Amino acid sequence: MNAVCWHGTHDVRVKSVPEPTLLNHHDALIKITLTAICGSDLHIYDGRIPMMKKGDILGHEFMGEVVEVGREVRNLKSGDRVVVPFTICCGRCFYCRRQLWSLCDNTNPNAAASERMYGYTTAGLFGYSHVFGGFAGGQAQYARVPYADVGPLKIPEGLRDDQVLFLSDIFPTGYQAAENCSIQPGDTVAVWGCGPVGQLAIRSAYLLGAERVIALDHVPARLKLARKGKAEVLDFDNIDVVEDLKELTGGRGPDACIDAVGMEAHGAALDTIYDRAKQAVRLETDRPHALRQAIQACRPGGTVSIPGVYGGLIDKFPIGAAFAKGLTFKMGQTHMLKYMKPLLERIERGEIDPSFLITHRFHLSEAPEAYKLFRYQQEDCIKVVMNPN
Image (tube, rainbow, N blue to C red; front, side, top):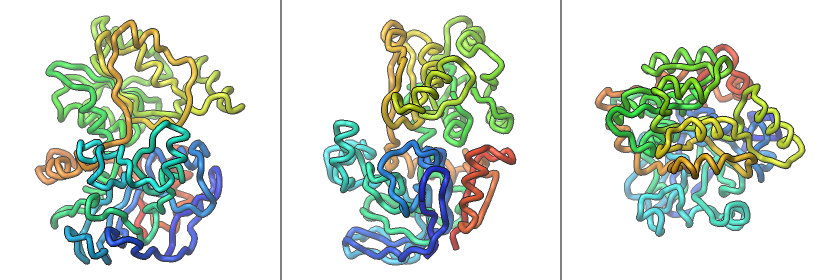
């Protein structure tokens, strides 16, 4: 089969690799019908995620048709159409039983590596380095899905693939980011980053009752799309972010701030130059410019929600401001199985159609071009999907 394989920084290739097979009685084999490039895939593309190996198959946003199931998989059968969550969960451990799905401690076969980096292991992830299990990803024609009796969500007839594909990651991720804000009637939510997760966080904040959403970015196409989602938009290149947010909220600041940027924040401010210099000599792994702004801007007693991926260590973290203002922080990988079915129901009811994000469609064979276009935001690219077959 053909698959998108990592070969180094800014080097992805479509190669012929062996088709997957069932390795466990809880496995399923999926013929992939649609897959996507996620913003967090770009962290791998840029060489920011450790423990990648040449030939690793990328991708964690995918869906398709069940081809074969192991004998312990009784909830799926050949021919079922499913969306596969990016986290791999056992359904039985301490964390899964508490719906803390992304913290599953049974599904990462490289748990020791994760423990060395973070103190504890977390769930295995598709296509996201050997820190998280080294599982082959879904930018391919077929995929093996471990614990298929727990994760995949069956999709009813009448819904297009592109309507439901983002249930695999970014729709639940944006929704959890908004839910973590504990939104109350009348609240104002500020969102840093108007990429795909930021766009869905904007719309999720309104679904959850926010009165106002203020979105920050500097890419015109992203700001335009955020405005279509009823957000007030700010180009962070042309303003004093903290002061402008205070002015827009009567001097108080947003009730909640969402950092949908993560570890590769851009900007021309002094701290971004500092971060790039330290990152270049490996004295810092992540660039937290957006997070610093969110902490400074958030009102006292407010919440900072962090769906943007962070991978290691950051410097100049304004812990004093966070402490003095009594901020609440909520962050982490998405607890996918908590959200997939309820959000599918919202799609079925017509409350939202996540396919509005898709600006570019490619065949899997064009993946290297698709990665470049997405990475460098060419042609007003917001979101890329690929058809493998």
